[in-house]
Amino acid sequence: MELTALLLYVGGLTVCFGVQSWLHRARTGGDAGFRRPLREPRSPAWWGAVSFVAALVLGLAGLLLGTLGLVGPLLPLDRVPAVPWLGFLLALAGFVGTVGAQQAMGRSWRIGVEATERTELVESGVFGWSRNPVFLTMIASLAGLTLVVPNVLQLAALVCLVLAVEVQVRGVEEPYLLQTHGADYAEYTSRVGRFIPGVGRLPRSGIAASS
Image (tube, rainbow, N blue to C red; front, side):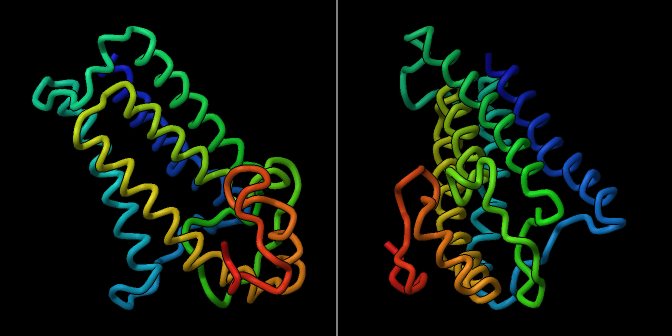
């Protein structure tokens, strides 16, 4: 099961980043969709990027070393045969959901934020249920893999990913979208939850009152 989880992780990252970037480039006529984070050390964008890269590296290391038997599980989840399978199904569903949410963004899909750029505000489909379905499904994927290979590196990767998402969403993307789309985004945040439907909605007065 550990090897299967490792292959799913590598395949999922390849599709979610490599294939998605290629499709976006074809859709937009040359834009790969990657935006460099702000260079100011210890800015929200910087911390978000560092935490995200740490999550990717730790996730790969945890699965690889777990597969090789070099790092043992912290939790005896393997004693319950159903847990690894449930984790694998959650991870698989998360990767499929990530790809679906990326496709739902269309030409507005980006990794990172360019402050001077204006893209369409996507509010339909899965974005009518969650303002950040891509991040939500990514966390679900890594949580599922952590159930399959519950070692210290996988747990650290999951923590880093959650921190990266929180910093990126609250400190970078929400202020950018409010500045870019103004009242339209404020209205959107008042009726759609940040990650989970109904949870994390914001007052129409703006993100400064973020819950």
